[in-house]
Length: 101
Image (cartoon, rainbow, N blue to C red; front, side):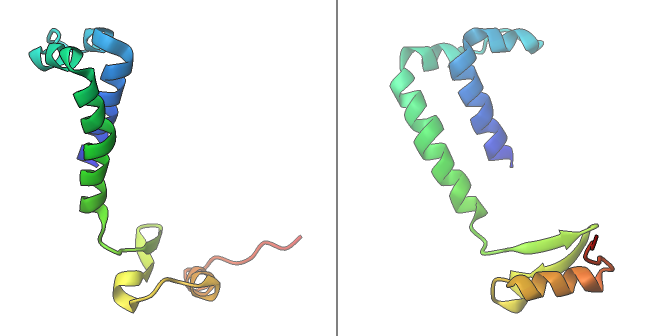
């Protein structure tokens, strides 16, 4: 999540310019001016390199359904993705019932 926040900050910096630093207690950092000198390199890093790095850190093949802080289905435990019956039975075991009118 930290990498995602950094990426969003870099994109906001590119779009808003130095005005984004008016919200921070320190002035415009020196790397910002270097970014302005080479905007193509900045765009490549922000939109191609950073997402690739983020995706590589996020690939764990985990898929978990969590209800009230309790894991009700885990792909890591079962070794497969859930189907509709898995999800509904997990919710029913947790005490959720279908609403009928």
